[in-house]
Length: 399
Image (cartoon, rainbow, N blue to C red; front, top):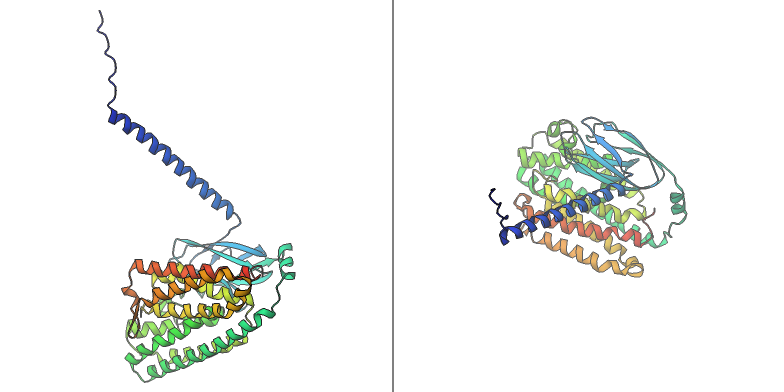
């Protein structure tokens, strides 16, 4: 006679709950995975027209592009060994750019392009430039015919020219004082005078960055040159900054200071000689603040030797404030709802920067924590995002 098999024991209640919980977790994880995959797919679909450009050590692939007029997205992949930039140029003017693309990473550049032929820069300033051909479309032809009247923008654009002239004079005077201190061999005085000279440039930076070659001589960082700090093409503010604060040595610096004075004098002349389309009045300051939010605030690379980044951020904000002030009458009439969030964002960024003020300017940026830098970036992005809403509200976004 066989021994009867005892019935299976009922699992304890705690075990049953554990098994049920595991099932729920697995279902939730599957749901999250599905949601993430769908989100990624939707992003790929939204960006299916991205133009892929790969930056290598000494070239870009491809280096000749053709796209239709209108909004275009370029994914720039950095396969070189240093942080680089990529720019779209219309003659000497920068149409769109992305700076400080880290090695091994990619960034998206969105541009609203008119028909025509453009140049593209590729990483190091010594690398050969490429070409970008933009073909007309029915939409671009219609947008050209639907331009709003420019009469309303005459006043703001004229006042901005006055701003450029006065700030250009301030820049020339401050660089001249810096150059004289360097000529006199006074290191401590030159270090002190670097800061107001740099701040004066940053108040002009949104407009100056339109002038590609001149701005590269004045403002390019060592990363964009083959031999970095030792490259003979590395001149301008950051070459002086390197000698004053890193090397603490004025040897051989006099001709570089003199060249900077010549270049900032030319900068003022060219800024006043170039016409500024109304659709670029806001976009230049918005782009400048986006670059602050996307990279400069977090990295501290802009003023890596003097750590005077906050000094420059305040100058960038002053330029943005000036543009908002000039457009306030137009916005009050046609887009008044934009002003409260814009004013609030500007006030919050100003308050954040003011929190770092000390007796002789701003605290050294190497003492600003990662969390504080993130707060600065977030507030700069809020201002830039608010500025981005102005052109569509004024009928300029399709130009």
